[in-house]
Image (cartoon, rainbow, N blue to C red; front, top):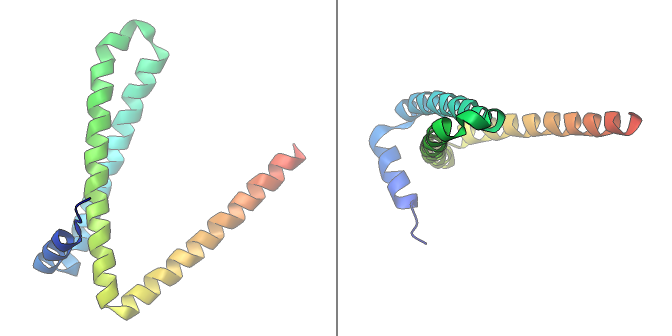
Length: 119
């Protein structure tokens, strides 16, 4: 498998952290919109057999677009991780926040499981 890391670094170094953080916001918005569009067409196909032939290709195209937008988000994410390795205070702060968010979500999962046991 070819590594894309040298490409990630070259792009990141060319544009810089500030620009790529802004670009990340743009790509996340585009990914979000593509997920909603994909879900819309997928739901139509699943709920309306009569319209399936009409909406099936649109659902397929929306799914492909969603994959492309996710790839954009992941490319930017890897660039941000590359910058984090070079800026230790930035990396430390982001990892602290990530840890806190993971802990919070794990607590929510425990609560969901506990609620499921009482039903």
